[in-house]
Image (cartoon, rainbow, N blue to C red; front, top):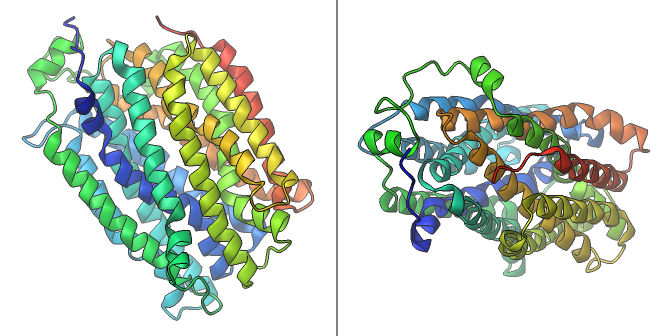
Amino acid sequence: MKQKPNLPFWSLWNLSFGFFGVQIAYALQSANISRIFRTLGADPHDLSFFWILPPLMGILVQPIVGTLSDKTWCRYGRRIPYLFIGAAVAVAVMCLLPNSGSLHLAVSAALIFGLIALMLLDTSINMAMQPFKMLVGDMVNEEQKAKAYSIQSFLCNAGSVAGYIFPFILTWIGVKNVAQEGVVPDSVIWSFYIGAAILILCVLYTTAKVKEMPPEEYAQYHGLKDKEGQKDSANWFVLLKNAPSTFWKVGLVQFFCWAAFLYMWTYVVDAVSETVWNTTDPTSEDYQVAGNWTGVLYAVQAMSSVVWATILPRFSNMKMAYAVSLILGGIGFALIPFMPSQYGQILPFLLIGCGWAAMLAMPFTFVTNALEGYGHMGAYLGLFNGTICLPQIIAALCGGTIFSLVGGHQSTMMIVAGVSMVIGACCVSIIGERK
């Protein structure tokens, strides 16, 4: 099998640059969905159910995109057409979702409209996000993959910083952060508009700069006999049966980590508001202030991830780097209910950022290395996305029950998330690292 050459830094950068814009959209969604639905009138005990749609769309869309793109060869590339279509739909939906409460609908109708918009948004974000992971798997050699995914993690977190702080910055410059009952504040609505504009510009840049391998060259670099390399059956059940053990072992770690983050995204706005401002009333000004501040804390997490992502490649042992990062993240989650100071909340999110950086970079490094020579890289990475989505679906379904068991306090759910992260860190020990 012909070895892929080392790529210059800017080629690695261009492969993932569009992720900056996609992650702005994802950050706006993850930081504001609970806030939007609570503003529309959702009950806290039912809040986790609204979070079923994003991972459900991911587990359906990403394997399909991966499998179809494995078979797609056209003048615009193999993965990039799906990136562009997904981004275009995401831009349209980002202009609709935050306006769910501005259409003079009843509470139930506004919630249904918001759910449909959320479903479309997450479908399109997943469609736009998956090609970036596959481009690295297609075009980067094993020696550079850790570096390539670290660059992707850096851009991902830089995009997150921008998306998270938009409502805070817009409020600071005078955009209204409160609105009538049931209506999403202008600070959130305009954040989505700005994010949509940046997303399409970043994707256009990637489309112009990245040239994918033609079929014959791809086959040479991936040890495939036919020029397209994908003529054999890509039945998902067969692929899963033949998947390397690393695929499943990393998936177990993923289960506990992504369940933890699902609970953070679902309950952290209320947890911070409850711990610092002593309220969980979405009609209060303090709650909306807490919502903006949570965006800033998310940005702290993202900046911490940016820094930690540059440190991860320096660990001589990847498994140790992975486990230590997840333990730090678990400690961060558990500290949130014990930080009654607004600025004290920065420390937990600095630690959470370490776990997030590892979750973005490490799993795909382990898995894509294990998949070399298997073929069907896109299909396998699409299926591997199930280890991200399925834990969130299960966590969302169980969220209301766990919420009641811990006394109906959103802040206590952060301790549940911390315990889950530490369990994930313990599971890292079973991963077999390919040299």
